[in-house]
Amino acid sequence: MLQERIDKSETRIFKAVFPNTTNHYDTLFGGTAMHLMDEVAFITATRFTRQRTVTVSSDRIDFKMPIPAGTIVELIGRVSYIGKTSLKIKVDVWIEQMYTEEREKAISGEFTFVAIDDNKKPVKLAI
Picture 1: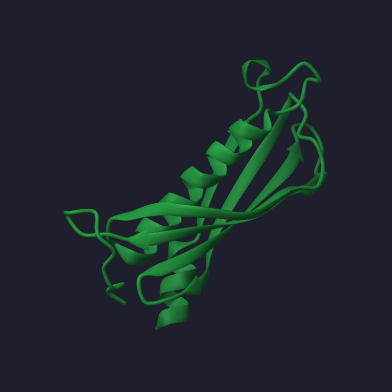
Picture 2: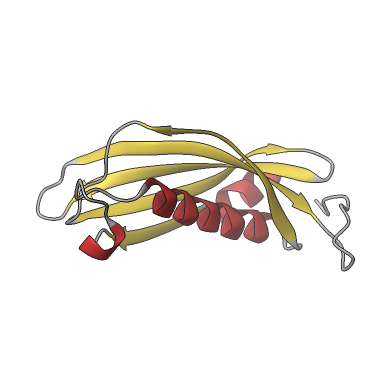
């Protein structure tokens, strides 16, 4: 049942990389990528817990290759660890070329979330 809940909470979002999100090298800003990753991680954590959660840390984020303008990115968030009040979400970012089947992993990272109550104090995960 837990595995089914993990599977159902997996989150996939696609974005096109347009020039307004790129730097002077014509590649996606690292901060923009991290913003998108945190958003996908938050959605995944919320879908899994159905509780209020907040980001408390971003663990190692590996930028394996630049993401050029004119590509499509897929962000995939998946629960990777479940604690008493916290959980970790692994996020992978894949580059897809717009007009070919080529696909490569560009970024991976992990985000830690904590469930909170109305007073913003940590609470036990209701799992």
